[in-house]
Image (cartoon, rainbow, N blue to C red; front, side):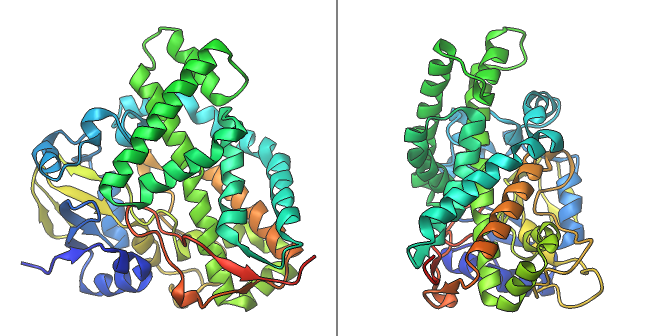
Length: 401
């Protein structure tokens, strides 16, 4: 029996190094996840691609209900949290749900948002520039994607702080806290759906309400609220942590930040390198074995849970031009990674995340060129549980402007 890998807050704080150790021992490991459930953790790139495409590893938890219930993990039954949406669905339901919102996140629609994303980034820098110090998570990396997804959905500004709190807890807190946050966010969005029925606007949530109320069978009420929850959470939380991880990496390697200031044309490619180097989605949401199978030589029984460590898999692939995959190099081209997933569940919002990251990083580096960490970077606190990886805060100093 192989050693059980337990995903703790300490593991997550040192995740890149811990995953590197695991990859040396093999591509698949028996693990206990931060929600208390035991299953299999996939850390190797080839094994990750195999798992993400395997026809018997599905999002439907039916074979695993006994295991999930024993662990008190009931969101699959109640619709609380991320239930009732495309991320937790298999084809054909996944295909139907994805098609309903795909247009809002197409590359063309995303390009139309660029001027507004730039306005938001500039406004946030305007606010923090005179201070000389800031927590970049609180002042920049969190409010930018929250504002973007809120405007897309039609969420009132007065409510954004609450749903930012709920969504971050859903993805990075102990299980009981996650469930409470999921309940609060579901309740709020159900109420917002009712408000949009009475007073529709041109936001995406009103468009989804119209699809639901068209009574053509394409969207149930549970799916409507579940899709809204997914868009709120995945539509900004991933980018919050992408930006946080990128800025930590640049503070550790200031010569890389200088390169981006000197050559802003490198920023779009650098975003791919940040995604490869330290993915904001540490591992994908669970898959459940619908039959006995073998994954990279490891026997997995029907009903067992499989988690794919996207961040580990992205470092387990040769980088262009050779070199050490553990090192950050913003000049690399043709970078490959699994940070947005693989196969039918490839992240729908990838074009928007890339746009927000490129605009945010270019703006911050250009306008505040002397960012310096206000605390030792090794002392930063990281998201302690769940699927996300990112700093909880990022205190910096700079010359007031």
